[in-house]
Length: 221
Image 1 (tube, rainbow, N blue to C red):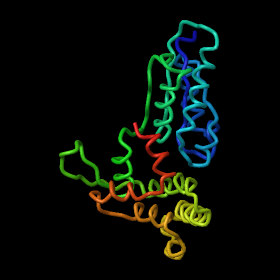
Image 2 (image 1 turned 30 degrees about the horizontal axis):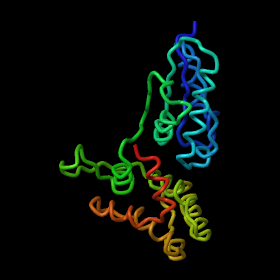
Image 3 (image 1 turned 180 degrees about the horizontal axis):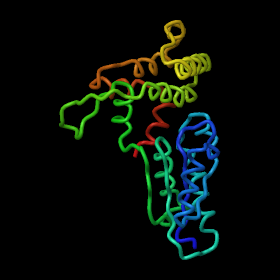
């Protein structure tokens, strides 16, 4: 019997809802009594996260309740998809429809997330001392890829995307030749990406182009 409904939002993956890991998880939830809907989000397939994805997720929530069932409705989200998934709960048409939320590997504070992804430093609270843990090397290049598309300078955008692709294909690849080609917008993103001092991160974020800051603010929980 179907015990509950769930909208499951995958993280950043080229295969989107067709990723074998997503299919396996959705299948497992189905065996546990959930009716599962996995929306297709082109942005996540392109390794981009946008506040506009909240609308698509909200539409999926409404679709699951197109006819009253009396069953609980939940939203599940993985990694970077947690931001837009939570944002969808506050879209007018989806508000007050969801009974539970399941998140895996998500985040809460965007500045803290960027600090860890770029420098490896984190702390338990604002007044706690910094601690270090080696971050996944690909994390910073995924961050670069998702933000490069938001630049107004087309040459900087293409250069940063090439930089990210090069690093994602080979973490030891050199990108100095590309860094020297960057203009002001690209340099502001690259400066944040290559910074190693956690105390400098807030100022480096403030120096980012408005188009990048707008999306970051939209995804900051």
